[in-house]
Length: 385
Image 1 (cartoon, rainbow, N blue to C red):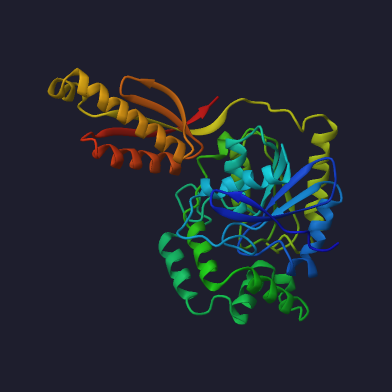
Image 2: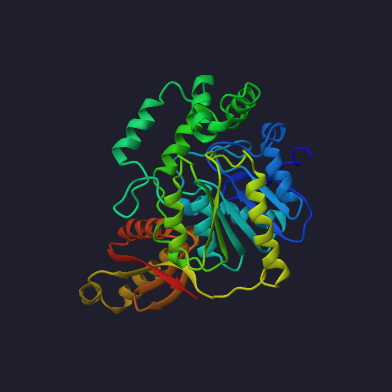
């Protein structure tokens, strides 16, 4: 089996490279981690074993995350909601109405957010060696502190992407293969052809902002979590923490020390196949057990509206309110918000994540200043129907 034909999905103004292999009765979207591409070089080594294993029973949908591999490079640091949208864009382009979403490292939080936000598109969620947060908290002690993260990023300046650096990452991510002279050159070519040093740094900065601890309890799709016993990159206790906070999630502990999914991937496929085909055979693939999805609710209203009405009079006030409403609705469209209700000069709207809601609120606040108005705004996470 060769690397699949590369196609492109449009996600906003970014082209996301994707490909499809296999023709099974179910769809599996693989949301890979770190900085490696799913096309070309990985098919020349052990990563192809994983692709073959999954595509032997499913239609496997692969894509390169924005900024990586064959996908467009981006400016700035896109938030997790924007990156999550790339999954939906790829599914739409591949003609996938509903799929199992499988995430590995930072692909896991993207997958969790997608499953909580779009349960009608998510038949199942599979998480392999996935952190909940990239920074340590009182409840999550398995991640580095912010200071440790900064020191780590600083230590990589000038060496990212070099052969020596790639060898060090291989020792960390796949220690049982690091001494194999046939693996090292393949691994170097895979990493070096997937991302430039700048893209690697940008990905590290993006990941350092991830924390989906508040999303776990909102996931309502069948979930399988996998981790190897002696994985040092994502300790097994952190995956037990995750599993205990996702309702109904099942945890499978795999033997070994390798973090990488491309090593001994038969272990992963052996758990994945019966879990997903079991849902299919029992008729549960298309069951949406809840009509509640994760959302962020935004409320805005015009500050001091009573005093302003008295100052400018009814006629001018009606004109200002109409302009205000037009501006708010324009920003809701821009930031993918959904208008829920309008009362007087107040708006209720929902978003699929807090980042978009906050940016929309800022845009509204900045925009109405030109009208001589000021708004109050508040955001809160909620389950929406």
